[in-house]
Amino acid sequence: MTNPAETVNEDMARAKLALAAAAYAFGAPLEAVAVERRGGRRDVTRVRQVAMYLAHVGFGMNLARVAMAFGRDRSTAAYACHRIEDARDDPALDAQLDALEDCLRAAPAP
Image (cartoon, rainbow, N blue to C red; front, side, top):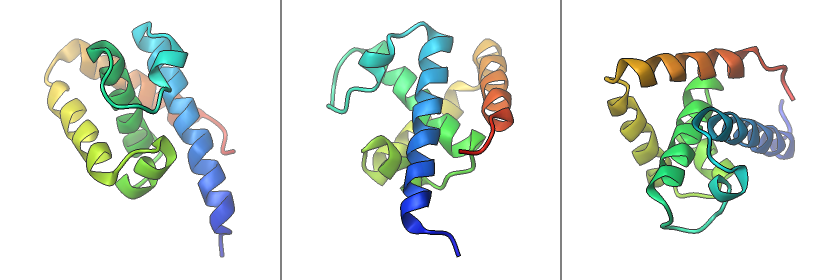
């Protein structure tokens, strides 16, 4: 059986990796994306939503685990994933997200 503390630590590591990958890919400062307060710049919010989406899809984390790892409510994580999934109609964004998902899936387990 998996130790719950280890799972939380692994989820936090995955969230940090997803945040770093999203910030790098979209040219956003990691410090701004990692801020835990509401509001802020729209572009930074979008990158944070991408990171939550990547944690959910790329790492297979359920929304409750994504929310906990990002310090957000489950409904916020669900909203972020829906927003990004809807935005995948843009072929350029879709290709960028596919590449990011592949990178995260290739990352070694923590």
